Image (cartoon, rainbow, N blue to C red; front, side, top):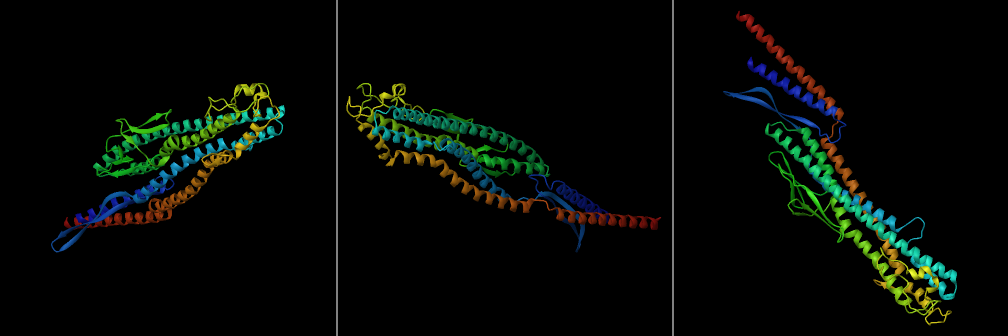
Length: 452
């Protein structure tokens, strides 16, 4: 008789636990990051002589339905996506600084500058052409300085973005460390903290977009994290990241507080570091080379010529400004346009050989075997080319992430129809166990009445 009571009691407990778990699934069906839970059960029995007597059902645990392999693949895809999103945002800014809606961009201004020297060669004494030439040169140099300043600002924004990303990564690592403690305590009491495990999934999801990492599941239930092969989170210790930035040399090094260098290869952080140290400086270096070439070649010819006022040789551009951030027209030229040298012979105002030679510079292959205007066009088109490649890659990654999320949803998502069907089953099981208990009670009462 006692065995029957125990069987009924275990059935009631099992049905109640299953019913409450199903109810929790239904209530959290639309909760972001929630993983469907199921009650694991096992039959209990006892061997008596040659017989095996059933002793009811034992509730082993309440487990989450989650495919960790899919989570791992999602982390990798999101890390790559985070990197590309950061790159895309920066290259969009770079493209905007190089290409305007007005059409008066770098290639146009350089071409117009040489065209005006060609016009000057037709009439070297025409002051209106000289005025237009100097005005266009001033606009060209101002435009190049603006582009350089814009690139420098974008560079600073990238370093700032990297620092903010590091701050957020450290916050996430601290949150994960706190979860390690609660999950470890729950595991020690054989009561898995499923809510904490779901929260950990959400934190890792955000972290994967910021930086690439490897995880290690420790026996205690805690999670270890490595970035670039360097441990940043152990069972009980967080090792915060910090940025070592040199604005002069454009270096961005990621370190632990003990000086260990960490080299991430993915996520928003890796993109910010690469943009700051490599991509933006490389583009600015090409812009500086363009400015230096224009200054050097134009000045070399201009010093061989003569203006309308005197026989003194002069530079056209200020020789102190040989990069895009400092290029400018010589103050004497700006103050008096008659100083523009068009003649190759002193005192011959109608001579235009120097002006013609200046105009011919546009056809010379002065930079890496390219004409100056062609080089400017390639420089301007580089961010757009990178953007096109990034957009294609991002479409592929978005499709992969969507597919993996759908697979994980099938694994861990809540199907309301399935849960409601299970609720009816558990309700019936509870009622059945209650009837067994009532029947055992009646049998016990009958037995007592017979023995009185």
